[in-house]
Image 1 (cartoon, rainbow, N blue to C red):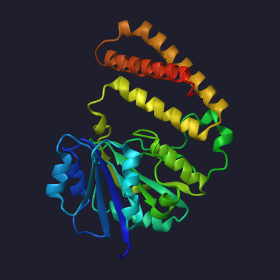
Image 2 (image 1 turned 120 degrees about the vertical axis):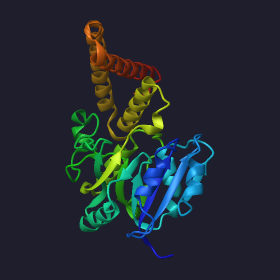
Image 3 (image 1 turned 30 degrees about the vertical axis):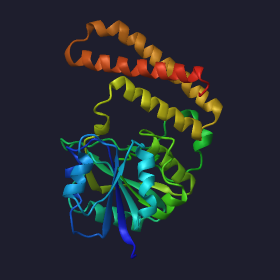
Image 4 (image 1 turned 60 degrees about the horizontal axis):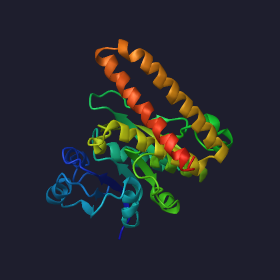
Length: 298
């Protein structure tokens, strides 16, 4: 078969109210030549059925169980015919018809870039933070991060263009990551392979964010994020570095909990709600780090 310019991969989990707008934003017949894959991770909201009925041109794969973001993306990697991959979240939609063209043009013009993120906008049009110049815990890991090319450490995984041959060579996403941290891990492995991470400012995507976790309670989300972050550390940092980070994180979380206990009684309204949210966050971090330490994982 003739190679296409781009293969678009969307991993879906219970976003029936959003994935339609995502697919509509891709257009039907406009250039460039592309193919679209939707991998459904055992949704229960009818979103897979909706994609099958309304978008017959989409290559739909329905998993009987939730395999996680990384594994679902890798699942269709052998099927992709595009020179480039475009990883897109179902709770995002392209802002304008030129996003795919801009992404392809950028990757063509910057052969040193292995993967590039796009501009991300909140639904109200404000800029969403999607670029990081540092990896988590990097201030403790100077020797592990030294010598990498480019200034960008990683970009948000909700909208990313990448070179198909490179991603295949690297084995795709690391499937040890189920939901969080896989984009940071992939970006670091790409840089260690001698490429840079890029940013396509002309290509904008409106991103709702966190929609697949709408049914999860906040404490569980923070525990998942913390476990993913420490998985990243164990894969890429020295054991002594991980121990330093854990010590610093525990100190910070405990200090913040004490400070919140002293100040929360004086907070009202919005500030009180934000304070309770922070208390949930730091409690979850403490619990996760303490339990993981007892199991000998950090």
